[in-house]
Each structure stands twice: as structure tokens, then as C-alpha cells.
Length: 62
Image (cartoon, rainbow, N blue to C red; front, top):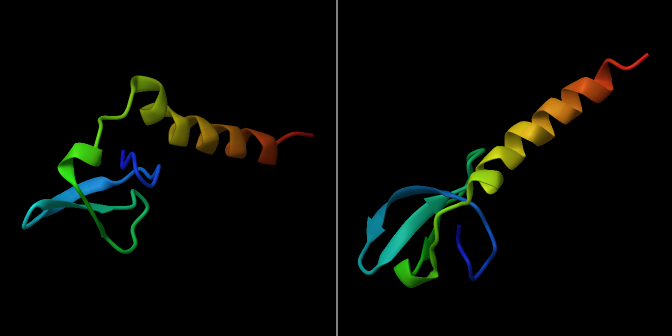
């Protein structure tokens, strides 16, 4: 989690003193200072899966 921009990303590498993150669904990488990173909580890791499951379940309602 990039705490400055409130964005979730996948760590792709390092460039100098920055860590490079990429959005989970793909896209452009961005640079983050290591002190501005934190691990996601268990609940935050589940949000995308819950959102996807909810989206699928509403499509099939009668």
C-alpha cells in the first residue's frame, strides 16, 4: 500500500532509493519511497475478491 497516494500495488522492483509499484490489474508503474509503504491487512487483501464475488452474484439474480 502506497500510504501517500492511498493506492494498492504489486512491488516490481527498485530504482535507486525508490520502490516501483504496479497496479494489481496492470498498468503503469509508479515510484514510492520505502517509508511510504505498508503491508495490506488481511481484510484489504480480501476486498477485491469480495467485490468480484458480489458482482457475479448480482448478475444472476432473478
